[in-house]
Structure formats: C-alpha cells, structure tokens
Amino acid sequence: MPSESYAEQLSRLDHVFYLFGYGIQHSLSPFLHEVVFDHFGLNWAYLLFEQKELVPCLQAMRDPKFLGAAVTMPHKVDIVSHLDELTSEGHAIGAINTIFIRKENGRRIICGANTDCIGIREAILRNARPELLAATKSRPAMIIGVGGASRAAVYTLRRFLGFDTIYLVNRDRGETDAVIKECSANGFGSGLVHVQDEGQATLLPVPGLIISAIPDSEPSNIAERTVRSIVEIMLSGAVKGIILEMCYHPSPDTHICRMAKKAAWQVVPGVEAMIWQGIEQDRYWTKREAREMPISDVKTAISKYLSRSLSGSGGSSPYVWLWLSIFGGVMDS
Image 1 (spheres, rainbow, N blue to C red):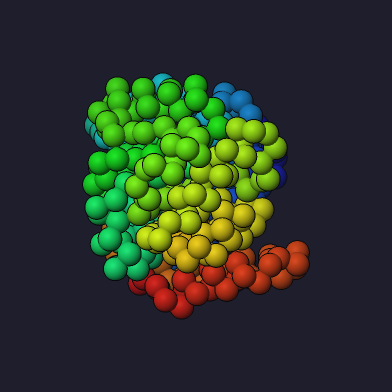
Image 2: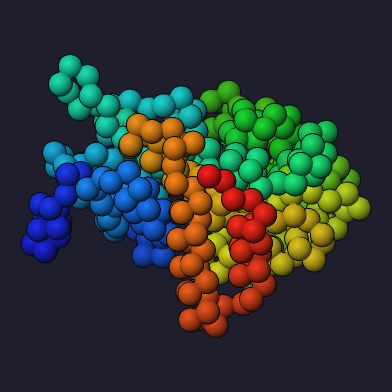
C-alpha cells in the first residue's frame, strides 16, 4: 500500500489516476497524461502503482479521489470481473486497459474500456502514407505474436480497418489456436490464418499491413527462428506495405524495424499507438473530445524525453531519425 509520503502527495490532489501493472518503470504514459492534465488546469496526478497481485490495485480503487486507471500486464484480463460495466470494445476483446468512473444516481459505476484498439487504429490512419494505405485494402493483414496486444490488433484490423484475411505468426500453436477461438467466440475471428512455416508463407499473398507485437530479442529456438523467417519472407515481396512496430522498449529501433526499413516498408513506431490509446483514455477521464487534446504538446514532451534518454544511453541514431521524422511529417493539433 502507499507510504506516508505517498498519502501526503494524494492529500494535495483533487483526483488521482494510476497505472496498474508490473514491470512498468519504463512507461512513457506519465509524460502523456501530465501534459494533458496541465493543459486543462486540473489538479490531478497519474502515478505508477506497480503490483504483481491484483488485490492492492482493487484496494486503491476504493479511495474517493480515485477517478481512473490504466491497466497493463498482468491484470488486463483478471480485473474485468471486478468492474461494473465494460464498453463494447472491452467486452469484445475480453481485456481492458482503462478504468473510468461513471456516476448514476449518486453511485460510482466503475467501467472498463479497451483503448489499445483505438491506439492501433489511429497510429496507422494518422501516419501511414495514403497511397500505401489505399493499396492495403485488397491484401491480407498480418499480426506477429499472439500476446496481450494481439486480440486488440485483430479487433482493429477487422472492425475498424476492414481486413477480411489476417495472418497470425507465432511460435506456439496452442496460443494461436486459443486466440482464434476467443476472437471467433466474440464475433470477429473469421478469416484468421495461422502461418506455421516458411513453405506456407511462400505460397500466401504478401500482406499489406503488419502489426508486430513481440519483444525485441534474438530467436533462441527453432520455433522463434521460424517466426523470424516467415517475417523475412513476407517483407521481401515485390509489393511493399506498412508495419506498426509496437515494441519500443528498451529501444524502438528493433530488429524487425530495421528489417522492414531495409525492405522499403513504411515503419510506424509503436510510441504512436501508445500516444493515441492514452489520448483516448484522457477522453474518458476528462470528458473532453480528442480534438481538444494538446496532441502536439504531448508529442513534443515525449520526443524530448526519448531524445535525451537515447543520447544519454548511447542509443542508436537511426531510431532518433525515425521518431523525429514522424514529428516533422505528421503533427496533429
């Protein structure tokens, strides 16, 4: 539970928001939400609440000053049963990353939403080159990895972007089958194809849009090497496309990012998805529309932090170029 100094900090606030999860010290979301709260002159704070267990998070939600939270692993599924309501996206995806409060007849209704799907959608629509995006409509999409972000990715590709066929590339068949089963049960699992080996990959049409949702690490076994080979095959086709690289820690200049750039694919950094899912969270929390949010200020704050962080740690200049090039080309206000 919070320390005494933590409690003193809360006493000075009108409302508090948390990030519930474990392994969250690298999160960029505090920079995002602080900019938004300051812009609207709100005496609110967004604080990291690192816990492996869910119970302390549930206890923190009882504080009258608690007005919402972001939720990450390992709590995105388990917390659902403790909420009063889910949005349509949260219900369909079966996992939530956002908690907000709705009041009804003086009662606090604790609601859950999934804004990961909004982040993925907006990252693609706001950054993809129009000619490439138009060309993806007649081609399949592909998701690398079937972890926590994969269900939101499938939902986004099917419901928001209109893809009929979606390849799933993953090292474990059981995990992949489970995702297909869950998505099918929730009404958006048709057209999911598990690409299991290189031979199958060479026979399939090249996807137009790829979402990579795996950590940046070198393959350590046959299954992981097979995944890497399938990705290389798909990127090496004559027709190019767009890839959203969701991984940005410890460095967004990932192996897959470098592979895609070398193959002349457009890379959209995962920080963009993080920003837009966070803006959607702030829409729930502040009751203001996205068009009212200080998007440029948010991007500038995160850009400055990343530039300092990468410079201080000897980070690679190609990523600094990639991230800052997006700011130079696409700045929403």
